[in-house]
Image (cartoon, rainbow, N blue to C red; front, side):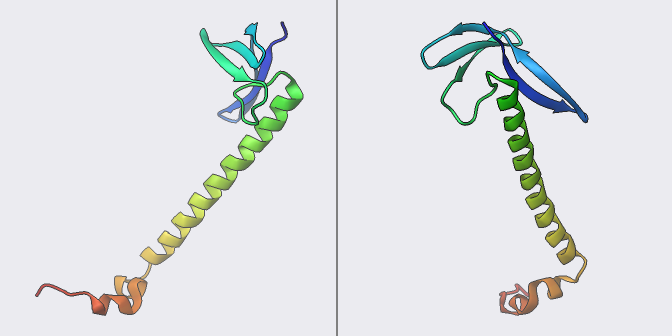
Length: 104
C-alpha cells in the first residue's frame, strides 16, 4: 500500500514525513505514527496526513498561513498593550478613572 504524507517544519528545516499504511477501510486508512496506529479519514478537509505529496504540500501551506495569521493577531494585541503601558494610567484610562469609588 502506498504511504501517506505530511510536510513538517522544525527549527527552520522543512521535511516530508511518510506514514506507512497499516490497513485501509471504506472510510479511510490506519497509518503508523511512530508506532501508534492513527485513523485518517478520506473525506475530511483537515487530516493528519494525506495520500499524495501534492495534497500534503497544500495542507502545509494552509496550516502555515493560519499559524501566521494567529501569531499576527497576537502581536497586534501585544503592540496595543505595549503602547498603553508607555503612557500614565490616567492617560490610558481616560475619564473613566474619576468615576471609580476610591476607598479613602
